Length: 146
Image (tube, rainbow, N blue to C red; front, top):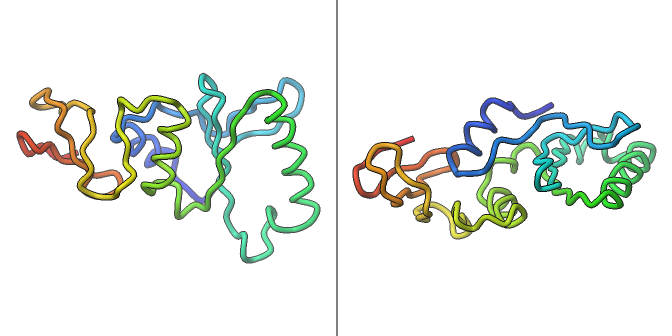
């Protein structure tokens, strides 16, 4: 695992994405885990590292096993997103997750930093939060940072 679940959970909470389940075993008989999953939305993320270094996910046998897992997940109604560890907490992946869970009210971070969304500030209670950088937000009304 090339990402820290504690940091990921804190980031997702900051931007209004529900808390995921890590290493979620989605299949009733196989022990296949998704790296990150939101079972209530049947949405998962597979974080694949070492894709340019002939890692597990870029060799023939590993690819065939991955295909078997992903095909079965698709047959069960799951949607699976893919990324490298470095892209997991970036705006593009955040926006994809938000679109997939279908909750635009929590915000859309598609045009980068400075984007406003409707998450309420814990200090003043107004929906004026602004993205400063991944995992960092600021209230435009009272200046609270989180």
